[in-house]
Length: 497
Figure 1 (cartoon, rainbow, N blue to C red):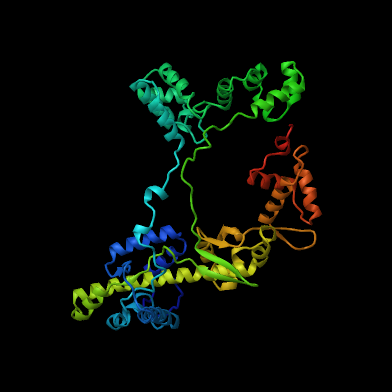
Figure 2: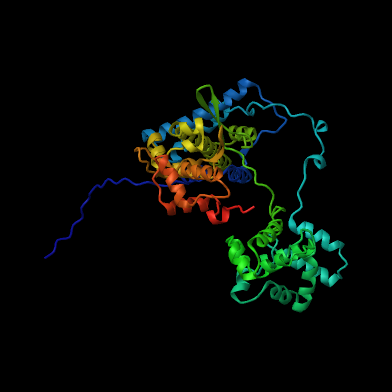
């Protein structure tokens, strides 16, 4: 007979609860400056308690100091309660006397920065803003000035929109898989014949830059050669039938195939060298991408000073209107509960942004400590560094360091770098010390830059030169780094004239 009975037992477990506030703080860490701005403006639309000071507002120093002091007190209170275990998560924020907090939180904005000159002293937008024409803009302008008919201009516009950044008319991946050429695709989409498209294509190929809208390198070079009226039949023969040999600089094989001397081939190659293999590259596909550093590292004597870039980041504050509304709202009423809920969200956002900036500062400070030689002497002195090194130095988790270094840029005496740049693997040296992979790439770049262009160094010779600097590296690794640097093999780097 089985006896049934109830037993009361206690079990202690440790569990990590991801509160919405903690998730928000983690999310803020990995955001770039632009993404952070977008998130803050979204929060300001959803939370009426948050606002930015007006541009024409000015606050005295004492009021700003009181505001900052109040914010620090509230953040310290929350952190102290959570650290000591008295309360957790939202409860720590709920226990705060929001009415007293708002009394301390001055409504004045932070100190204003340098005054900007009045708008009448500034140049007009027409004198400071300019947009460089793209390849499509330049070709479309010529198309409108051409004597092509309305239907032909429509076909020409479709051809121009189908060009890639190098100025070539190539089919997209889907059309290539189905066996369609770019001309066939345009004819099908516009319900015209391929002959009509070919006719307009010939006209577009005469636009500036010459050689644009060609379907391959051979066609582009031939168009340019005809336009330049090169009176050398050997040039056309080489372009038409021996481009692969020309790419490998196998001039002797070209001479044998065409039954001419090597000197004649070299003279023809000199003319071909003046042609443009990528006619569209002089026109930008997109505007330049400017990077705004998140942090600056300045050298002051023998020390480095780290300064956070706060320019452009929203300066949030609690709306003074809601301070008055909270003081007038009845305790326990819906209005008071609503304002307190929005205050909790606002304080967590402000605190999370403050924590984000502080963590970026600490990580940068640790990087400067580990990579001091880089800041002093440059990339060649970059040391191997992994996320664990910085994480252990700061008492953080590796994932936190990874998030902080994503899409964050630092301005240094050596240039602007992403924080992730400073983390790289090590390569063994014969003297026992490891060298960073980025340093090895820089040494390869310098070796190739100093080589004799008539006798370029092979990958094996580069390996031997690195060994003289006590760097052990395989030939295939040199080849991989060379390709990453965009450096051609030795046979293609050789200059014949």
